[in-house]
Image (cartoon, rainbow, N blue to C red):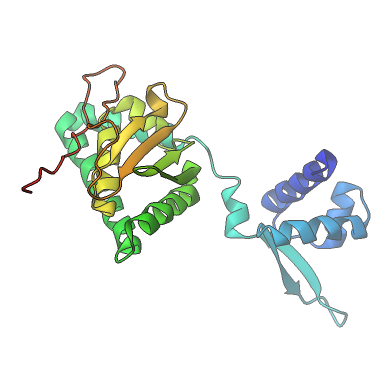
Length: 240
């Protein structure tokens, strides 16, 4: 994409955010480009779901279109420091109420997430569950992908939106793994963690009856606290 065009579209978004709904003519004056040029940029932004027009009556003439941001467009301007803010609030709560209160709060929150995921995955074959979970996590900002492997499936999160919270409360990693276990109904092995030195957060989900390729789940070392080992994957014996 042309960098100049991208810059102009960002200017349009900035103007709509700062000044509210605007017509093509008003945007043309602010940007110093022709109304036709403005319309070309508006078409792209509307296609991306960032803006939408609304008709405005003006006297007896044709109604003008006022362009404004959609909820998706508004999200572009939300602050990016929610993770830091959440971690700070929980740290204050820990000082006031103690570690166990915060741990229980996070445990309940992650359990609720697991139940919500499970509702969307219920009744699906395991492979479909893994791929749909990856899609839901991707939509949340985790940049998630799922892949079929020889003995199961891998779930990889290339972005950790809980990064600051995990740094402050390392046991959140284990709670996250338990969330995926809850919604998939199978053992989940954690392989990597961004917050603790990995290039991604990755998990292995074994196909039923095959277990982990390593025979056990790997533990992730946590900074600034004791290591919380993931539960070992149970291997079924012949008489199970």
